[in-house]
Image (tube, rainbow, N blue to C red; front, side):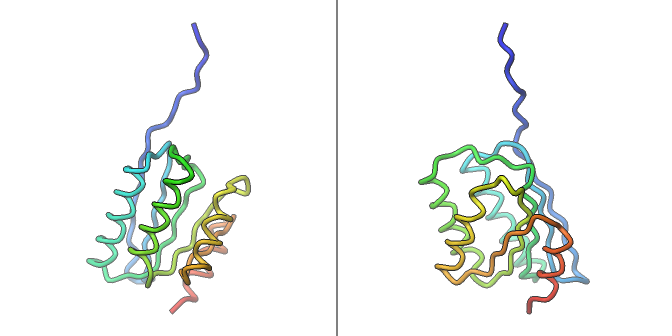
Length: 129
């Protein structure tokens, strides 16, 4: 009998705070490229309907289950969908992909910033116009 760790399936929750003008998404589990892509497309469609352009994205419990080349493809999708958004990402210090995402965001003039603390992410997000 082998001792294998249980893999948590991918899921996310989405809440809209109209009075503050932002959406909160908490993603968790192990996400495939298609699951992550679908999540971002849903976020973008929901944001259009809700007329918000700010997103707080908590990925502290998310593991990406796809290759580095697919990470770049997902980043290009994010660039296309969210070029007029402000995105505050809540990450863990061990998440090396956060640096890659920040470099990509700077290179493509995207308003994406990573934080280790939800309060700091909130403060930054609310200040954006």
